[in-house]
Length: 111
Length: 115
Image (cartoon, rainbow over all chains, first blue to last red):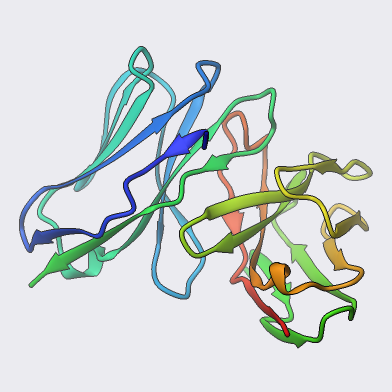
């Protein structure tokens, strides 16, 4: 069983809507959680990270973490066509010394 | 500031040939990583180096070797390429242990095809 699970999508939302991307993880010892955005043919780039339960907001992006449910999500408000990309969830812990990535969710924002 | 630089960006090999992917970072990071990305599989860790002089296996190390030449450089070698190694390879670096709080910075990727 893969350690980090994401729905592959595509998730299609209209411009201006809220896009909700979800991720579950299996290791209860996980301590750090990251969201990366990857445009087609490009390398991943960090959008947000979160370490504590609750919400963390940065501009149009909000990361949500629920360690009891082993669930992390990314909300994108006022979605723009430029947000169309694959979003990768990554999970880490100090014992492993490296991030484990999900397979990514492809987001399509329709103009 | 170049960040993480990978070479070559594209390579075509025949089965059984060998090659080395080069990676260098100029951010004075301790940790460096090699990932491969296949359609529908996300990024899978091949090897990593938590600090100069150390290397450790990741999730999919078979068929690969690595060398942490110095703090800046971390190379990935395919001794006898196989079609299953056709993939996009990403090198990444981190100022801290990426399993803790360290953000990963990625190179542009190397697209390898093995015929």
